[in-house]
Length: 218
Image 1 (cartoon, helix red, strand yellow):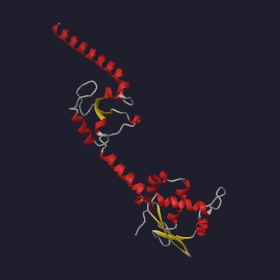
Image 2 (cartoon, rainbow, N blue to C red):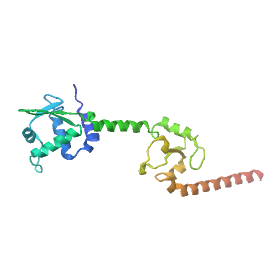
Image 3 (cartoon, rainbow, N blue to C red):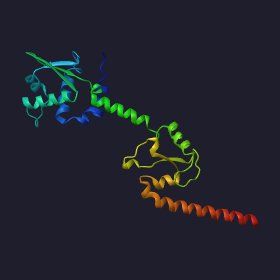
């Protein structure tokens, strides 16, 4: 079976490592190195005694030989998190089954959550963006002006900086001007600025219509 080392590393760094303590992460990588990433005989399991672990465990000038209790705590914690399975013990050591990062429950749950978030993303998917525009009948939900594909924007009603999502119910069709005013603000924070902008635009429209009327009369 071919081992995709790059994939394993990506899954570990991006999804598993953030949930492990530095000691847990280093112990997991150590066991991974001597099992699935063993160049001579790759295997899901490795049998090793605590003395052997202490001898092989990476050490530097600031790291002393790990104590038996310390190693046991890290190993038991990794088992509780589903990263390894501790098997039988013999004269040759304890049997450890090392679970790939992609198969650890913590990582599986993160992938599931990510898939759900992507399926609810109506902001980045062009087809789903159009669904929001059509729901709002191509009308800016702030100034009520009609928009087109060229000048339509999607506003996060609850801003992203305040935890707003890309879900359909949090998106509003907006013209470019209203979107720039509302951007990064709650509706309450932006309301007064939106109102001033809308009033100014309405006054300009009235003046333009009046000028056009009198120019025709004259």
